[in-house]
Amino acid sequence: MAGGHAPVTDEDRRRVAELHAQGLSRNAIATQLGRSGRTISRICAEHQPPLTFERTRTAAATAAKKADGAARRAALQLDALENAGRLMGQMFSPTVVYNFGGKETTTTSGRSTSRHSGTSAISRPRSRRWPTPR
Image (cartoon, rainbow, N blue to C red):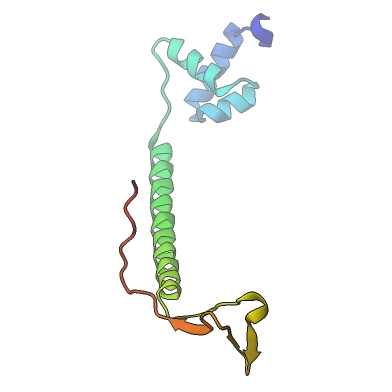
C-alpha cells in the first residue's frame, strides 16, 4: 500500500463504471466504495471514454448559495447603515459636560459647580467630516 491507501483494482474501476451508469454522483460512488472523491474522479478520467458527472444540480446549488449570500450581505448593509445613523445621532447631539475640579467642586440640586468652569452644555458641531489620515 503506497501512502496507506489500497491500490485501485480492476474491480474498483468496473464498480465505478457500473455505479456511474446508474446515475450516482461522484460522492455517492465514493461513499459506496469507501474511496475518496478524488480517487473516483481519477478513475473516471482514466476510463475510456472518460466518465463525466451531471453538474446541473451543482450549478443550481451554487447559484442558490450566491443568491443567499447576496441577500445576507444586503441585510447586513442595511443594519450597519441603521446603526451608523443611530450612533451618529448620539455623537452629534447636545451633551452635558461636568468639570469636576477636585476638592473645589460642589454639588447643588444635582448640578456640579466648580470655581473653574462648572457645568455646561456643549453642542457639538454638525460637521460630518472626518479628519484626514496623515
